[in-house]
Image (cartoon, rainbow, N blue to C red; front, side, top):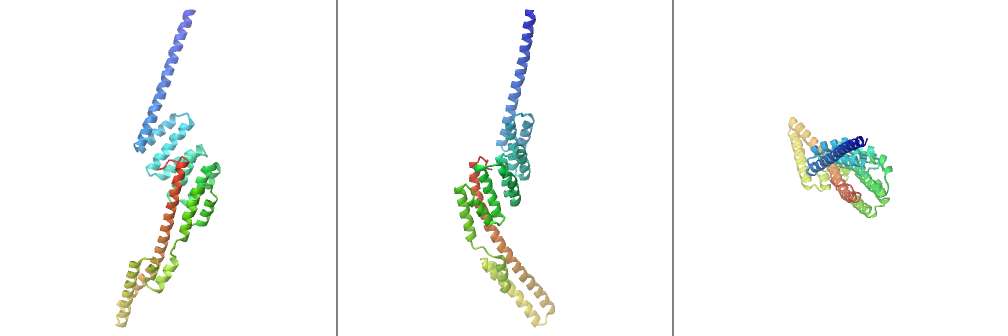
Length: 290
């Protein structure tokens, strides 16, 4: 009887030891795989890192660890410049955890970087209810920048004025006020001036060389057309008239486009200035800077 008990105890010990060894080996293997994946990420071998993190996700039973791996996958795609794929991977995180701030911010911010300002705000309208405090204020700050980029400065100002991030919002309001006070050239005025006098629209836009060139070219074509007509050169006068008309109409349209371009450059520079403030908020809220 005693002998049987001892044998059973020995067998149990052997089985327990084997199971323990297997568990230890499994833990060690997971740690090694984790270290490998992070090493590849740190070495900027993002495609290989993605493969390793995907493998790690299959064997992990801790939801928080799963979210860490999923975030690393999304970051890897973003660092590879595959922004749409990064958005899709970040969305997997928000599907698991609707209040996952980093993923929410990243999705809206990537849309913004892609100039999808409307889509960025559309996304934020759906998810902002999941956040509060400084995180909500940061997302609202991003949303206000989108409104400004959509050429809605009044809406942006209103949002900044209601934001509790006093210091950052004050800077943003000052930047927008400076933009509003800038001498933004009117496309219609530029076109009208080029209509009544060749090159005047470009002069209005401070494009002096273009203005002078436009004046001389149109004057030359106009003179050639009139001279051909006075000398009875029908073909020459028709050809000169076509060239003059084409250049004249082109300069009217060109002045308008140059004015729009100047306005867009001013708008883009202001958006960049606002996004610099946003980067400071990223570090405050634990969002990893790219």
